[in-house]
Image 1 (tube, rainbow, N blue to C red):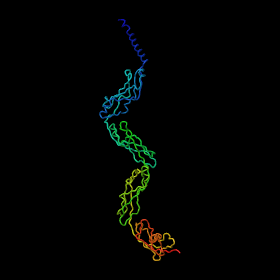
Image 2 (cartoon, one colour):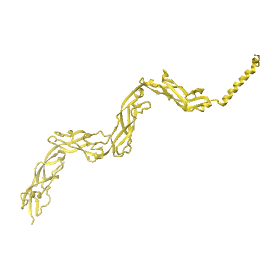
Image 3 (tube, rainbow, N blue to C red):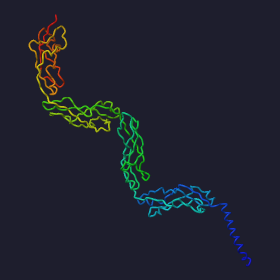
Image 4 (cartoon, rainbow, N blue to C red):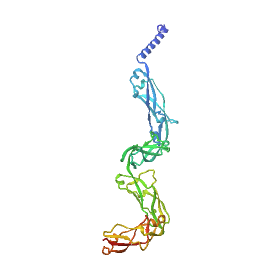
Length: 425
């Protein structure tokens, strides 16, 4: 017994020395070290606990990714694991009142040999709110510029509606769904698939990372038409009141329009004929003014080609009063038209110097007529052909005068003059 308790100090020092030596040997052969990994994804578990309540969640600030994870373990363990062995999970069952979930980080290999794991963040932050949905009409649009002489004839989509789902606050922002096709340089129809883009009320694109859509793209058909300019022609109906007449002048603005269509449709269209009930001048004593919808008179397969044109034409049909006036026309203003073979033909002017001619027409036209400006002719050949035997004997004959009158002026009486015919020697 004495031997056990004797030299106890030396024995204690020996024990401590042995422990130190063991520790040094152990750490020299397999020391504890650390390794750092970055961007470790966190798997959310039991998310159905949120979705089954008609709610959706959104991860905030990218907290479902741990920016750095540091593992402390013996070197032999560190050398045997990689980033793929790190398992990070967050269970929705542990969702706090602040909508945070603690992150549990472990390894799927040598987890019992790991001395410590430290992370840059230890919770996933969530935004939890009601799930909402909305149906939207898909609006097709075009961008860019077609080749010269071509216009968009129409644009349609293979699907007219889209349904979107997501957080209520996000879905409420969405106002429109659009697809756009770039038509730059095209001269023929375009059939393509285009991405559906969502916009808010201000026309800003909405981020769809939190939105599910029943379609991401849609088939779009863009019809492209050729163009040409054609004049407008009006059919005037009826007659003005007594004492009034059409002047023949029709003012129209515009006087021509740009039409568009397939080449087979527009190639035969050289004018747009407008036969409208508004163009009835019956009983009028002044100009007729109206506005015509040109689009109503376009042939099938033809549309207006100018998107800036409103499709109407302002029309004025001119009507003026009619006057009647009698003129004494000098006989010398009447001449013989042509020659008669074998005969000398002359107008007999010994009995009278003038003939009386009564004219009717627009007042503005009649006012510009004078007796001196009126001329006429007699056609003896026509007179011979209309005679009983088609021949003439020497003598004097009464022949009707053909007057050279301004447009819109008519003679109300028939004027005849004597014509002397003598056979040539």
